[in-house]
Length: 408
Image (cartoon, rainbow, N blue to C red):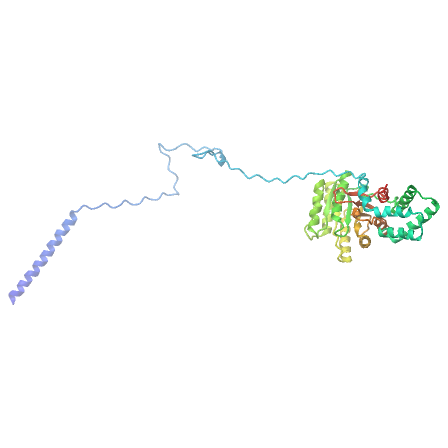
């Protein structure tokens, strides 16, 4: 047993020695191998706070020079011609050609044929009746009916028939020429030749003259205001238009178009704005510009008489803070006949009407409205409209009007 133990110890000792020897040999082998070099450390980031290094030989050492800056259009890009950047063209507003209105002198004579066609039933009808051999009561009643149908009015008709009866009775024999002369004299007296029909636009000692235009929408009020501007420009006046009908946007646009055609400035305000404010500004700008006349187009709503009175009354009061109104023109549609008289009464109660403009007189056989409305309001007809043309608004001339009624 002892021998066996010694043998085991010997074997273990041998194994240990062998392991030690092998370990030593391995270390020698590894140590004899060539070591690989380590990678170089990354470059150190430059210190941005440090001053720049001085230039060395071979580098650009010249002090920078101030040179004028060039635009991109002046720089030649490599590989092609210089690029020119073009700005988009600015759209120019189209120039509005200023028109030269037709002179007002003799306009009614030129429009006489148009007037006589529409009034043929009145003048020619009266001449035909008066030319009858026997003027009995039935004939005189027909004469009265003719005058009433033409809207002359009851009282003026009775006066005219009474005078005609007397003069025909005294005249005795009645030739066509005598009858025409007789009727012309009586109609002229009825229409009135001694009334001042001048549109007041030249107040003494101040500028501008101030004209307010009133009337129901649909009578041609705004168009008439524009045409009146043409009448004034044709007579050598300068004009500012005030678009105080703020309840219809189309009214302001329409008035501005009329003004631009003759070179008249238009003052307008926001839609549904205060009409009195627009009227005030129009007069103010007219004074600053030194124009001759300011025309103010007003709203023509007749919803309630009270509302109309308040609105037009306010416009009148505000305008008169600058200066008194020189004219208040009432525009009436001649085709409405007696209805036009009702409108005239309402407006006459609101503002002091100084003159009447009758439109569409070429489209009705009721020319007697000239007589009736003058009697109703006690103010003269100053202008009449005889067509759709821009220059178809004419100063009212009683002689030319009556001549158109009875023909040549």
